[in-house]
Length: 213
Image 1 (cartoon, rainbow, N blue to C red):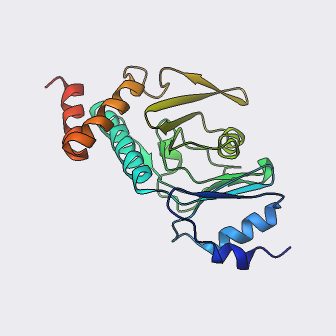
Image 2 (image 1 turned 120 degrees about the vertical axis):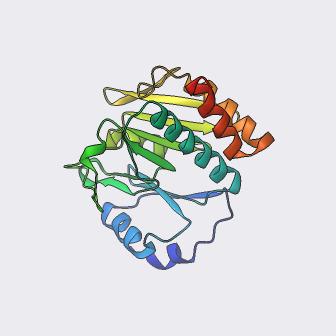
């Protein structure tokens, strides 16, 4: 099966996606190698389906603000973390691969300090992954198979929090990583304020509210 040439020629409009079914793990690995790391395409692979997506500007703005909000909370709470952005996470034994919009190691931050490559057969998955815009069943299943404990999916105008219970995600109103913060409410408020006054001032307001200033 030859997939490299058409993959290289794909030119998706921002915010669009395509699915390639019946793709083997070796072909998935070959596509990752061919596309390299410096690209706009994002990938999700699970159950022999590969999805390719190009983020839209709205998608990028939302995920950046949400990730910055997470950093604000961690900083105010005095907690350490490692943010690994859109790192490619894959595990052949689970036949799954994913590239989050953003991800954080919080409880397990020490396990990834200084590492340029991660092996999920040895290393833990991120404690929190963030997706902006509607995430497909392929992506959700990939996160489940990789054992990511908590997943946030923002789809204007709501944030859905998924927590891994056994091998399946369950929706919840509160974040296990931030039990003292109403994350759903905070994300929506900060994103709305960012549209009104800009993201930096919105995040500054949010930090001041956490500190009680």
